[in-house]
Every structure is written in structure tokens, then in C-alpha cells.
Length: 213
Length: 135
Image (cartoon, rainbow over all chains, first blue to last red):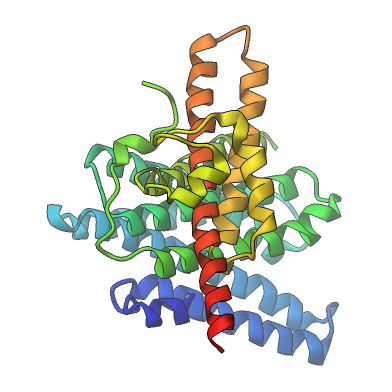
């Protein structure tokens, strides 16, 4: 995706998205290296997997905030958006810690799963609000519309996946097969948005509302 | 447990809505593209609309043409959207006729999208053939 953005000259314009993808790719490579050296059941891989996952979740949350800033750039509300984002992140972390503190055992991994689920759900809600605002403001930039919608799909799939993991911890198929499938969707959709759509492409958002009027 | 269940349900509802809007953004972009004469001959489309029931036939025709890698993802997404619309149409055929009408309109747009992709693939195949002939 980063290469696609570089080819189309959109790397700096969508810096947060590109940085997230570059970090995500780097993390996967380091994870693979740790896995091949120490093995799947090692403490090192366990620690790296959960901690990197949490950091990537928080990074994705900041990507969403960056998209907010992009949509509201003409309203000069950037300080409000940033303050709201930090407060929401702190609130979600405290809530997740409070939930996990009540249980015993592998507290750090459980905290990561709980926080990821909650952060992804906050991501779903925030993307939904952003999408609503884009419809209201009659946002017409096709590339931005597709970036936001694909992020919404990704967040909601991940939130559903983590909720399933919380509800049914023994369901191994959710852990094994769903993450790689879901993980491919966002880079593919963003690649398409960068490669196939120009920055000047416009679309009437009113035509994208789901329910018939 | 309750929180996780609630998150699951709400996330799935949001997923459906985001997915439908995403597919519509793909379809709307192609709805303004006029079809070439060759594509009109193959598909039988006269104006800028297509009957929804023709979508599976257009997808079969798409599979006969050499694939353009950039079309793969959008075509798959629209195929899933079409299946969702067909299911919705079947489920609500008696209960909500206006929803069925809306689903029919959407299925027609899906069919036109498939026709536009088919048109692009025909042009792509012709270009490839012309290049091979010139070499």
C-alpha cells in the first residue's frame, strides 16, 4: 500500500495511513523473525505479539483521528478533535483495565484482548460518526470516502472478532482463520483507493446512503 | 459477557452498513460510464440501466475474459453485495414491497457495474491481442 501511495504521489498527503501500514509491515517481519528464532510457545513471542498488537491498535486509532482532521480541516476544530481523541483513549484504557482487574491469571494478555475489543468498538463508533458527518457535510472526495468506509469495515470486523473471542475463548477457528483474512482487507482496499482513484475524483455522498429515501 | 455480546451485535450491524456503502461507492463510480458498442452487443443493455437478474450472467462472461488484477477485489465485493440484496429480496418479498423495489434497483446497478467491468476487460483483451500481433 505504501508503494501504491508513493507511486501515485499521495504518501505525504496521507502520511498517518502510510506510516501505520509501514509500521504494521515492519512489526509482522519482526514477529516472524522472533517466531522463527524462539518458537510459537516462547515467552518472547507471547510478549511481542500482545504488546505489538496493542501498539498497532492504538496507532490505527490515531489514523482514524487523522481522517477526522482531514474531513474537518476547513472547520478549524483540530484541537478539539485531538483533545477528544486523547480523552477517549484514556477512558477506554481505564475501562478495560477495570474490567480485567476483576479477573485473575494471564492479566496482561487478557488486558490486551479486552482493550483491543473496546478500542476497536470505539473505532467502529468513531468511524460511524465520521461517516455520518461526511454525509451531512456532503463530502465528495471519492478517495477519502473509500478510505473511511474500508476502515469502518475493518474496525467492525475486528471488533466482532474480538467480541467472539471474548464470548467463546475455545473457538479456535476465530483465532486461527479470521485474523489473516481480515488483515488482508484493509491494505487491499487502501491499495485500490490509491491506485484506481485520483485525488480529484468526486462522488455525491447522498447516493451512498444505505436505506431507500 | 453482556458487553461482548452487545459489541458483537452492534459491530455486525455497522459492518453491514459500511459494506453496503462501500459497495455503493464502487457501483456509483461506474454508473456514469457509458458502455461500448461491443459490450452492449454482448450484454444486451440498451440505456444506462441493466436488469438485476442479469448480474450472474455478466459475472460468468467476466470469468471468460482475462482478469485485470485491479478489478478482482471490487468484483468480489459487489458479488457479495448482490447476494446480500438477493437474500434481502427473498426475505422481505411479502413483508416490505418498497424494500424489494429498492433491492431490485440496487441489483440493477450491480449488473451495470459488472457490464462496465466486462467492457474494460474486453478492451484490455483487445489491447493484449493487438500487442501480440504487433510483436
